[in-house]
Amino acid sequence: MGDLLQPWHLVVLGVVAFLLFGAKRLPELGKGLGEGLKGFKEGIKGVTDPTPAPPSPPVAQQQYVAPPPPVSAPVEPQIIRKD
Image (cartoon, rainbow, N blue to C red):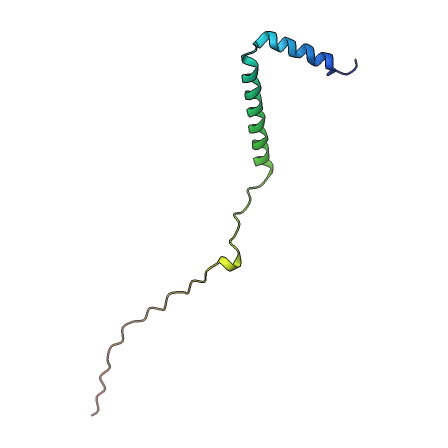
């Protein structure tokens, strides 16, 4: 059987496609096929690659936030009696 995609086979396929779809319809079909392949590749890439973790900011840009001071109960004056 030989090679299936020889140059003459591709020319014949091109002529048949031109006759079936016409000159106006072929660019639209090519664009749709290209967008479909692009979406397929992105979908496959999303399935095989895990979602990356968001990058943490560099140490120099992190700010230290001091904890709030402890809340203490109000101090009541003590009365000392001397008997």
